[in-house]
Image 1 (cartoon, rainbow, N blue to C red):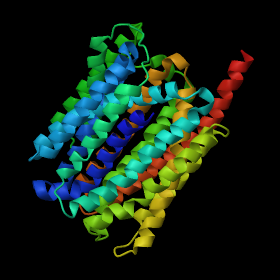
Image 2 (image 1 turned 90 degrees about the horizontal axis):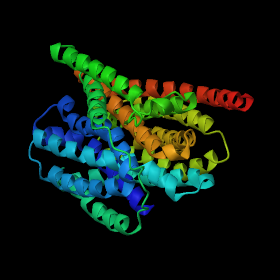
Image 3 (image 1 turned 135 degrees about the vertical axis):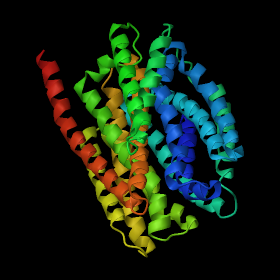
Image 4 (image 1 turned 120 degrees about the vertical axis):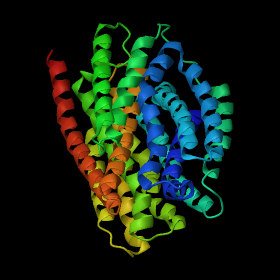
Length: 442
C-alpha cells in the first residue's frame, strides 16, 4: 500500500510545487502568466489522453507490469524537468512525466481495491486521500522554502528519492494481479488518446477563436465520432460505455469532474492572486495555501470511514458546499488582508474538499462489478484529470481576457464548479435510491 500511495504522493507533490512556482518560472523563463500555465496543462493533457488506454492495458497484462515501468519513466522525466533551460524543453519533459503519471494513477484505485477488503475499502480510500492531501500540503510549503534559496529547477529533483523508495517497495510487495489476457485494441487506444487530447486542447484554446481552434474542434469531434462507433462494436472496449450507462456511476464521475475543476482552477489561480493581487511574497504563498491541503489530509481518513456507514453522496454535497464558501471568501479578500483572514477560508476549502474526496471515490468503485475495478479506476483518475485540466484551462482563459483581474475571475469560476458539483452530488443520493428500488422491484 505504501508503494501505491507514494506514487500518488509524487504526482501530487509535483503538481502542487509546480503550481506554487509558476510566477517564478514565468519571471525566470521570460514568458507571460498565460504561457507558463502550459507547464501545468501539458502535463494534464498527456495524462487525460493516455489514462484510459493505459488503464485498459493494465487490466489486460497486469497492473504490476504497467506500474513499475511507469515509476522508472517518472524518475527519468523528473530529472529531465530539473535540467530544462527553456519553456519548450520543460513542457516536453512534463509531457513525459504526464505519461508516467497517467499509468500510475490508472493503476492506483484498482490496486487499493485489491489490497483492502470490501468492508474496509472506505478506510483504504481515506488513507490514500490523506497521503495525497499531505503531499498537496507539503508541496507549496516546500516549494516556497526552496525558492528562497534555489531556482525552480530543484523542485523536480525532489521526486528522485520518492521514486527510488517506491521502486524498492513495489518491486518487493506490489500485488501480482493477473490480467485478463485479452489483446488491446490499438486503433481504439489511438482514437481514445486523440479524442480526449483534442478535447483538452480545444478547452485550452477556448479564448482564442481562430482558424486553428476551429480545426482542433473539428478534428476532436471526428475523433469522438470514430471512437464511439468503434467502441460500440468492440467486445473489449477501452471507453466503458456500458458503465457510463449506469446512472449513479456516471453521475458520480460527473461530480468528480466538477469538484476537481474547482480545485484545479483554484490551485493555479491562488499563487497569482496571493502574489500579484494581495502583494504577498513567494515565501508566504505556500504557507498561506497550506491550510487547504492540511485540513484535507486531516479529514480524509475520517470521511473515508464515515462513508462506510453514511451516505457518501450526502457527505460529498456538504463538502463541496463548504469548498464553494471558502473559495468565495478568498476571492473577496482585499489587498493587505492579514494572514489569518487568508488562512481561515483556505482551511474551510480544505475541510470541504477532504469531506468530499474519499466518499466520492468509494461511491465510484462500489457502483461497478468487482471485475471492472481496473476500468473504474482509470475512469476515476481520468475524471480527476479532466476536471483539473478544465480548471487550468479556464484560468488561462481568464488571464487572456483580463490579465489584471484574471486570478479573481478564475476563483469565481471555481465557485461555480463547486456549486454545480454540490447540486449534482445531492441529486446523486436520490438517483442511487431510485436505482436500488428499481433493481429490488425487478
